Each structure stands twice: as C-alpha cells, then as structure tokens.
Image 1 (cartoon, rainbow, N blue to C red):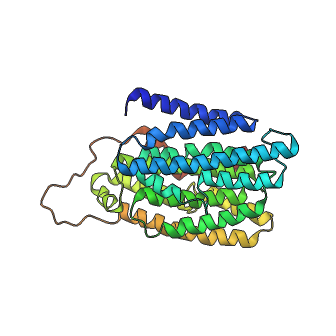
Image 2: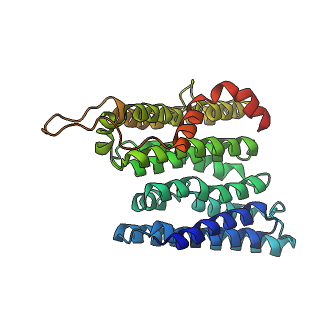
Image 3: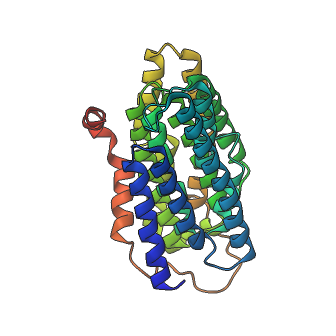
Length: 346
C-alpha cells in the first residue's frame, strides 16, 4: 500500500475517533463513526486478495447498517423529545434501537457473525485495529448513554456473547478467528456491567485492548496465522513464546496476572447489585475461554515440531523483539499488584 495513502487512512482514523469521543451531538458522533468506517476499508482490502475484498465488503455492509440504525435512533429521540444531545436519550424505542446498533458495531451476539470473517480476511495489524481502536468510539457512546439504556437486553446479549465466544473458539485452528471469538467473549463482560458501573466497563476495555495488542503484535512478529505455525515457534524464539503463553493466560483471567483484575471487579460489582445468578454464569462461561487460551499456550510452548526433516533448525529469531511488544507484554502480565491504584483511578 502507498505510504501516503496509509498515512491518510491513519490520520482519518484518529480524526474519526476523536470526533466521536468528543462530541455531544448525535450527528457529529455519527459523522465520526462514518469517517472511521471509510478510513479502515482500504486497510482491510490492501492485500487485493479475494478474501480481503470479501472481508472489506462484509465490514462495510455491517457498519453501514449499524450507522443507519444509530441515525434512526437519534432522529426518533429528537422527534419525541426535541433533544439531539447524546446524554439526553430518554425515548425507550430509541434506547433499544441504539443498543442494537452499537451491538452490531461492536460484534456482540447475536450480531457477531461478521467479526470472525472480517478478521480472518485481513492482516494481523489491521485485525489489531479492528479489535481495539475501532471498538473504542462505539464503547464511548455506550458509556455516555449508559444511564438511559435498558439493562435486560444488554445482560442477555452479554451472557450469549460470553457463551458463544467461548464455545465457538474451541474448535478453531486459525489464530485470528480464535482472537475474534476471544474479543466477542470479552465484550460480553463489558456489556453486562455497563449499566451498573460504566467506568468499570471502560477499565475492562482498556485492559482488554492492552492484552489483545500484546497478543496480536507477538503473533505478527513470529508470523503465526495458524496453530500449526505456532507449534514451530518455540525453536525460533523460546522467550517470546513463553511470554505469549503468559499473555494468553492473562487474557483468560488467571489470578496472578493482569486479566484477573477486570473479571474480579465485575463479579464483585454484580454481587453488590444482587445479580448472583448472572455473576455465576459469567464465571462458569469464562472456563470455556480458559480452555482455548490454554490450547493456544500449549501449542506455543509445550508442543515441539516433528523431527521429520533433515535441515538445521533455526534456534533464534532473526530480529530482536520490538520494545513496544516487550512493554505491552510486561503490562499484560504484571499490573495486578497495583490494582488498588487502578480501581481508585477508575
């Protein structure tokens, strides 16, 4: 891709996200989301492979439908109340349509079908953008309207997302699809707590983005698109493979690692809200995610490639690990001890 074209796309992404995050008016928020969608399409389809073109088409159609629903929701609210302010969403119909629209933007179940397919059709770096940066503007809209939203559809979608995200990730062999279902599962955790503690949902998003960025960049540096490729990385870069294993376990939410913090706080908040059944179901569904993260960790570190070839093994990776990858992995593993400070800030 032309460097100038890539620069224009990246600047447009930053501009679109900034417009949506900082706006109070529904039309400017919608404009920012549209700029974002149009800016990321060339990045998805830059390889000119039929699969990439298909991914870009699916992404465009889904996001266009979601944007139309957001516009419809805001117009209905303005018609009923005379208000275009994002925080003044009081019409129940508008709230339900907006919940549906943002769920479609994010990829919450039952509007999740496009996300694994789009992620599979693009590169790992574009996949990182779609999994983290592109989800931030819709999450801020959820954050700003959280007081007006009906919790029942959100809780249903959250439990279904955690269940399907874990269940459908079990039999995948492509790392991008596994990370897509992981993203759907994590979005379920954010959606269930959104109405009760919006700041906690945002904290969960920040930590999820941090850990997902670490995994995507690590996989990109070792060029692992399939589990079979991941099995051969231990011989090339043992240290990076070990760190990838720990980051995966952090994404799963195991206690000594950073990923345990949001799950712990969310279950605590759900218990305070007397939602014991929902907290129990979410905790049990996280075991599904733990299984496929363990599978990835097992492939990355414990499995050795079969010794059927006569060529010399490459024992060290040809280039050193990027400092950004090292920083993200360190933060993905070691932030739990400062959780009181993080929860105070949040």
